[in-house]
Image (cartoon, rainbow, N blue to C red):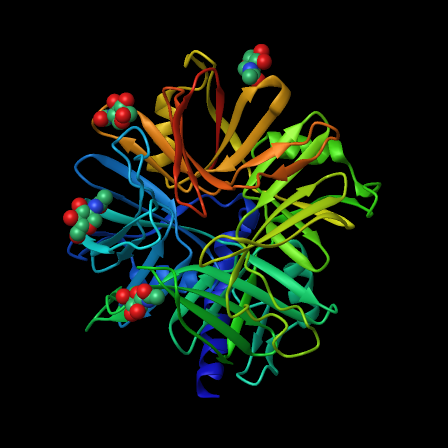
Length: 523
Ligand SMILES: *[C@@H]1O[C@H](CO)[C@@H](O)[C@H](O)[C@H]1NC(C)=O
Ligand SMILES: *[C@@H]1O[C@H](CO)[C@@H](O)[C@H](O)[C@H]1NC(C)=O
Ligand SMILES: *[C@@H]1O[C@H](CO)[C@@H](O)[C@H](O)[C@H]1NC(C)=O
Ligand SMILES: *[C@@H]1O[C@H](CO)[C@@H](O)[C@H](O)[C@H]1NC(C)=O
């Protein structure tokens, strides 16, 4: 109770400042602003760690930036641990490369950054199921900078619940609205842990359940956190508005189940108010709201996209626009049990299953579920039709740079791209490889400016292999599915690494010959 009173009070005080600051600008027009910068020993250089903490506790988006002797990198971070005066945050989304291309036998490089200046990296290969895990400290030069951007007009959670799932603050109706059409974040205020939610599933228009998936286990050190070594494991979590949480943990060394349990937690929910529904269809693909043209225009201008159907709200990781068909590929989801109203409805299966989907603007949703521990297809459904809502991130996404099929710059300059990296911007990419295949849009999981050759590189890692059907305007996932990962350069080179998910066999490293690449930023 004490805690609650305290945060409502401090929230109110901060809220007044927050509102004053934000009132000059719409919350969605806010630029990435450096909240805190410090050197590699944790010495503060600009801003303050408490500003950063306040922002995180108010549901802000965060990007981290640092440099080594070879490059300056910027990337979004998904989870935050508070330990004393130190904040640590991590991203899973780095593949090892040789400076210009992803390595043939790429290593995953989950990266943990702390405000005490420590940057640690795990490494484990993508090439086999059984693999040793390496643990390294990364030598960072100069400074580490934390950029933030608000997601709400006010500083309070949309909804807060006690451990037993009863309401302690806010509006469930508002949480339901944001869960349906937006992106959520959450704080476990009593544990000092904040995180992004990759997806939502709403049951019966009354229970919000949301998954947070990109975590590697951490251990406490006297004044920060480090990757946990004994054992190394990754964990999946699903959080519900009735207080339930389910956590499934997997050994990194062999992708076998470490442990799986559920409990009750109190939680503060935040919702990003900068999402707008632009198009809805009924289950036959007939428009019921907005226009397909507007959706296509927004997609082609670089905006992020989410889809809502059957109670699910999923992020479009890759988007194809082919003529007047939009196909969203979603890859950040794990299967729920779905036996609502049983309390386990949102829980993971004992053998957790990865869910990939192809959501078509024609109303067709193709769903594929794979066992996490061997990537065997467990279940697929290519026939489902749903009423679908399409939402876009209304923040100003601007085109900054474009190269044509011969690598010539046809818009902007490399300087503009370097500025995007330097100012902590989010970056998205449009790839046009073949006129018939249309345009493919994706997000950069990390971007960097190389000090070695002055080029800018983006890694885009979240795609699996789909293919167009001959007979109809629809896509399916290939039967022996592979992950394809891009490293795109400002020189116009699109390098692709492809590896099967079940056998782990390397398929190819390819340089796409004639590709137009457009870079968009949200500064
Ligand atoms: C990275 O590897 C590719 C493929 O082997 C090669 O063409 C390229 O020159 C390498 N880049 C560097 C910086 O070594
Ligand atoms: C992985 O970690 C090991 C052990 O710390 C280290 O020797 C190796 O260079 C690392 N590999 C990569 C790609 O970082
Ligand atoms: C997987 O790795 C963990 C951690 O090293 C180990 O304890 C466990 O026995 C391994 N499981 C199998 C099936 O090899
Ligand atoms: C690349 O861009 C040019 C000029 O905008 C266009 O004519 C061409 O069709 C594009 N190529 C592909 C593969 O889409």
